[in-house]
Length: 340
Image 1 (cartoon, rainbow, N blue to C red):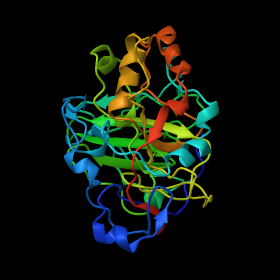
Image 2: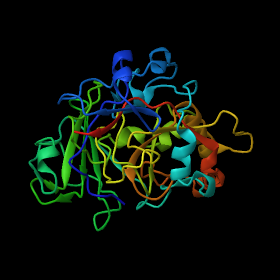
Image 3: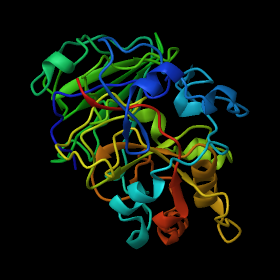
Image 4: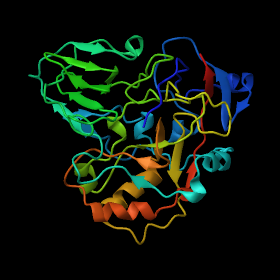
């Protein structure tokens, strides 16, 4: 479930200078600040991330590397410090009473599908009806049969995620409908997979946080290969009217600094034993220890999304439902932005 994005702050999570930190008061775990000048640049990096490990091969989609190796999505955060406000964030996210929920499986209506568009795919016009001013204009390489989240008759978010193999750009839309020859959607976002550049300030994306969706989805092929080399994405029911990079937007009016801002990143604690887990679940849980997960949207508490694929083993994935959210911690956040 998604709340309508507010006209709000975008940010660029990580790069925070010592001077900027000194100038800003605390807001939750990170420093609090007004929005920076328009046009967020690269993803930047927090002080701890400057020495973070990049040991795994960056993920690929359609032959395209998904962001540079040092991009936040691909950064090993297993050694990152814990945010000083971690306990309060976890309490607001009902971590003590909630277990993880994999919101994907073998059912073709579960998860979010990713469509690969070969170089021969024609570019088609796009019409955006909800947030046209925060959308990247078309045309997009959307085939008429691009897969829609939940199927063509879905009444849900109806995300469409397309990787353009010709230019290695990721195209994502929300509330998507094929109208011929192009598509009609609530909004659309385009990400250059070779770049760390974020969304412009105050812009949403197909996700409420202004983040890309496809990079955060576990996929059967990578799981069956034994390693996920990127962060995942998750939702909670209540979020703060704030964000921290690499998120660039929020969808809330709640100003409680103990509520989680969009872009908050959690990590499965090193002390949580994985000895009893196996198969697909074990690979996913190990990724949550190494790369963690970004808070990307409003929705059910601790729901993790994966790519739609009939090859998921539902009995295997049920293991994830035994993991308590209290086994997580929030890693140190960068600047928390609360206003444009």
